[in-house]
Amino acid sequence: MSGINYSEKIPNNVDLANDRTLQRALEHWQPHFLQWWQGMGPSDFQNSEVYLRTATSVDADGWATYGAVKMPDYRWGIFLADPVAERKIGFGDNMGQPAWQQVPGEFRSTLRRLIVTQGDTEPASVEQQRLLGHTCPSLYDLRNLFQVNVEEGRHLWAMVYLLHAYFGRDGREEAEELLARHSGDADKPRILSTFNEPVSDWLSFFCFTYFTDRDGKYQLKSLAESAFDPLSRTCRFMLTEEAHHMFVGETGIGRVVKRTLEVMKELGTDDPAKIRAAGAVDLPLLQKYLNFWCSSSLDLFGSEVSSNSASNFANGVKGRPDESQYEDHVLRAAQFKLETPKGVEDVPMLNALNEVMRESYLKDCEIGLKRWNRVIERAGHALRLALPSTHFRRSIGAWVDQPVTPQGKLVSREEYDRRLHEWIPSEADRAFVRSLMKRVVEPGKMAGWIAPPERGINNLPVDYEYVKIS
Ligand code: BYC
Ligand code: FE
Ligand code: FE
Image (tube, rainbow, N blue to C red):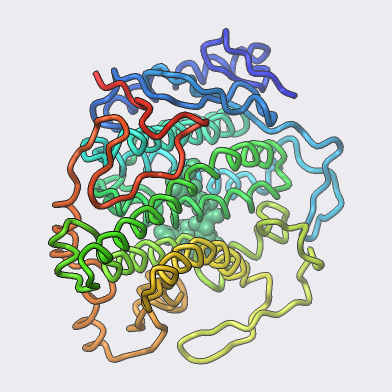
């Protein structure tokens, strides 16, 4: 077990006290982070006591300690998973050689860019979710939002640690830039597209945590394979926190489905207009939100054919998620059959790894859909929720700007433009969803568009006062 030293200004299990230069650099960045949190983090609620989990050690018993905390007092810190003794590179042309404890000069800029890209998403998501607290459907949900927010803040710390510890002056500059770019900012936007989309209602929040945090899971899994050992250990610990974010998404959408089915039963109809009039989210509307966030998140894997992904893999910089499940870890001879608008093409497997990753991501996305559809089926309805085609509404890669329906059919540009509002939320749909977003903060009470969760947090009852608002 690696204990975390809580007496220090920055909790950590990296022996920061014995590296005064690094400690000073991080202590210099810390107030900038706190300033960013006050200005760009959750709006209001900074004086409220939130029932949060905090990591106190990285092993199974200690990483989630629960208690009431004011968010600005949350102990953001630097935690790496325990080292694997004599860890070797697990894939690529240098497979079997010792993992790197320092950054090799030739991969310095690539590694820096990957870490910056990863780091950029973390505060971006906090910025995107900044106003959601005002319209929370329950105290339970409010608490989950803030749990996700403080942990994304900690993920930023995780990447900033790597930048400060291993990239010298450029690393410190990048760490400042991570606080200077902002989600949706016209001059200094966040790096990746999805992280500039507004998340202005809770249906979007649940879709974001379901689809976009899951991209995080897959990217972190692939970086956890990296030959750069400090990056690998950092990502392995981040993944333990990530599971809760996707839980929030999956159960959030599941509770919306459950509530909608109740309303349909009460009304004896599946007429969307009547369901909306009763203050619930009709299932076709939910499908549009799924289409929007899934297609946006698919772009986060990059182009189907990517020389970046090929060299990252060959060099040992970035592997595939769960690399050990594969047989071939070198991929110099393998080919991949890629669907493009011009037909199926054979491409070297090494260049298709973004697509390989996207496929494993989609399999993971299917799990929730199966669960929700089972509930819909049991309630006696024919409708099924589905993931959109990977060719639908893409802004990156082979299918960029192709007029493809969510079912994967290539249609005319005219038909696509005319029907797009059937597939993703229209302005009227968004306005309707916004009209549902009314703040509910009485312990145990839920907004009318969402069912209560099956259980509370950490064995507490659902009606526990998870946030003491002041
Ligand atoms: N938007 O060769 P290509 C998370 C750029 S989420 C804008 O196809 P590559 C979280 C790309 O950077 C996980 N630009 O792609 C979730 C490249 O630029 P350059 C985040 C994009 O390099 C919720 C060019 O297009 N982590 O943690 O193989 C809440 C051609 O790129 C986009 C990571 O992403 C886009 N969607 O792969 C909180 C891991 N896609 O080189 C947190 C780190 C591509 O021409 N990043 N581009 O300047 C990476 O591994 C890779 O950079 C990417 C792209 C997977 C993003
Ligand atoms: Fe994260
Ligand atoms: Fe996350």
